[in-house]
Length: 121
Image (cartoon, rainbow, N blue to C red):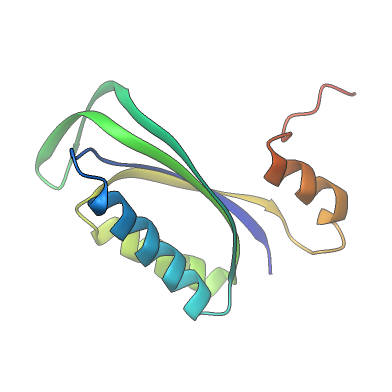
C-alpha cells in the first residue's frame, strides 16, 4: 500500500467538534478499508490567502490539518469522493510519498517526522 499525505483546508467554526467529526470520519473510512493512519497534525486556524467559495459559502478563515496514511488506490478514490461531498471541506490535496514499504524504509520515516525536504544533494 502506498504512503500518502493529505492536506485539508476545512471550514472554521468556533467549536472544534466539527473538525473532530471530519477527521474521525476520514480516519475511520481509511481504517475500515484496510488502511493505516500514521499521523494526524493540526496547523490551527489560519487566514486564507484569498477568499474561497465552496458549497455556496464564502470563507476567509479555515482550519488546516494534515494526515499521513497508507491505503489502497481504490480507497483513496472513495476518500476523494467523500471529501468532495462534505460541506466542511474547502480544499484538499493528496500527495503520494512512496509506493512500497521497502522503498519507504528510510524515506518514509523522514517524511512522517517532518524532514520531507532534504538539503543534501
